[in-house]
Length: 116
Image (cartoon, rainbow, N blue to C red; front, top):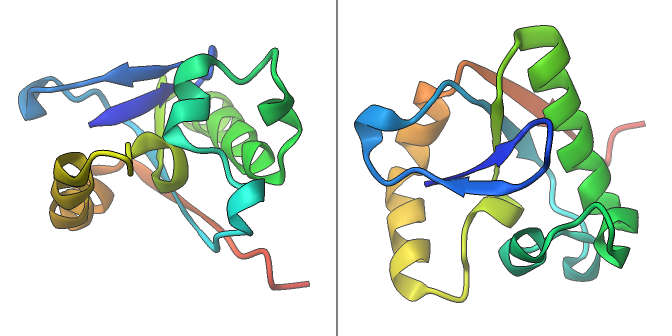
């Protein structure tokens, strides 16, 4: 499982389920693929790149800010950028684990882009 550090926006891997720290999770409506931030973009680093101007990064940033400031959580999980979709094994594991990941989250934020 990959989690976003809520202060650095860097992805960090957690391989043993016993060692997964408390985290926030984002449930959201996806934008266009070109507007969402991918795993590969997060791995490269987003703060100093054009990725930071994407609409999807705004959702990540708000999630991290809320997780840290309101809930004192050091980590967050967002499906668009915490799953390496280029790896079929990782994608399959993520699909099979998603219910547990939502259940284990300390808080779930919801973002509905289509509501005014």
